[in-house]
Length: 186
Image 1 (cartoon, rainbow, N blue to C red):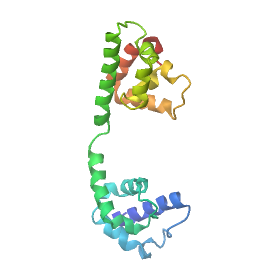
Image 2: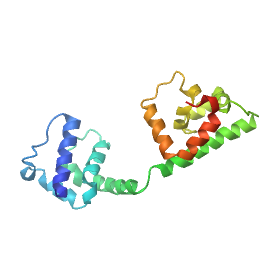
Image 3: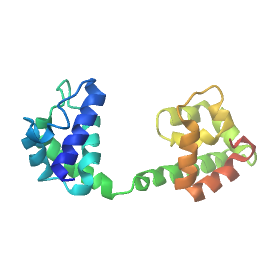
Image 4: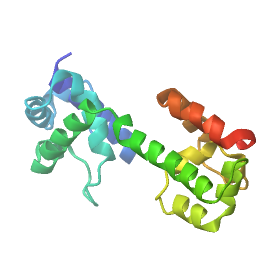
C-alpha cells in the first residue's frame, strides 16, 4: 500500500471517529477531490509514520477549524511533523525518571529532618504541606498511587494500569518504593 493511500485511509477513519460522518468513500479515495492533499502529505512523511502521524494530528488543537485534508499540507502541520519525529525518537521515560528520583529523595529528606524511622510514607502524607506539593505537581503524583494512605477516598482513572506501567518501566524505583512505603504499600 502506498503512503498516500495509507494517509487517506487513516484520515477517513479518524474523520469518521471525530465527526460521525464519512469524508469520502474508500473506493473513491484515489479519485476524490482530496487525493492531491494526501499525495502532497506523503511527500514529506516517511512510510512508517503515515497512520500514526494522522492519529497524532487529530489529537492536536486546531481551534474550531474542522479537520479537512488540506490541513495536512499546512505550515502548522509540517511543523508538528518535526515535533512528532523528535518525540518519536526520544523515549518518554527519559523525562519521567528524574521526577521519580527527585520525589523519592524529597520523601527521604523530609523523613530524616523529622526523625521518622518507621511508617515514613504515612507520616509524610499526614503533613498537609506535603499533600499540597503533590496536588500542585511539585512532587510526582503517580508515585503515590502505591500508597494506601494517599489513595484512600480518591478515585484515579485506570490506576491499576498506571501502577503496572510504572512497575514495568521503573523496576529499581518500584523496589525502592516497596521499602519506603513499608506496610502502606498498595
